[in-house]
Length: 170
Image (cartoon, rainbow, N blue to C red; front, side, top):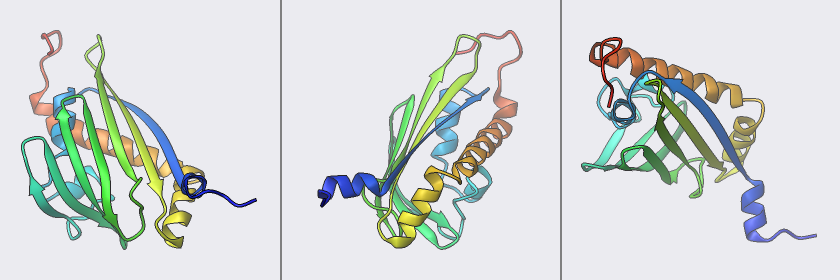
């Protein structure tokens, strides 16, 4: 049986769902996700400063190339919705056009923020397909660990900006 082009694309894609809880506000988390300055790799270990190139930066969007370890991608960031950041892959040496990330941020009554991340990886070539399969299966724990690390780094960066205990939160 021969697969259609759409079936082949879906077969070569991994969709990974991740969730974390943070003490920062959605606005603070978005500010961390969209900080493209030096030291970005402290927030995102898979985004080495040597790969980072900002092609365009607007008030609610950016066009950025980032990566590490021989894997890079150019992403179109959109944070026009203050509770959602989408990052669509527009070019990469391993990821196809269906790849990207979506972060949805939900403020909870207890003052914490739910961070729901969806990572889609469509392998553009053999290397991308292999990495995508690994990320969707045995290496999913690495993505979880990376998200936890990012959450902790954004919290640490914002610890002086947090409201005092019992203070009203937005």
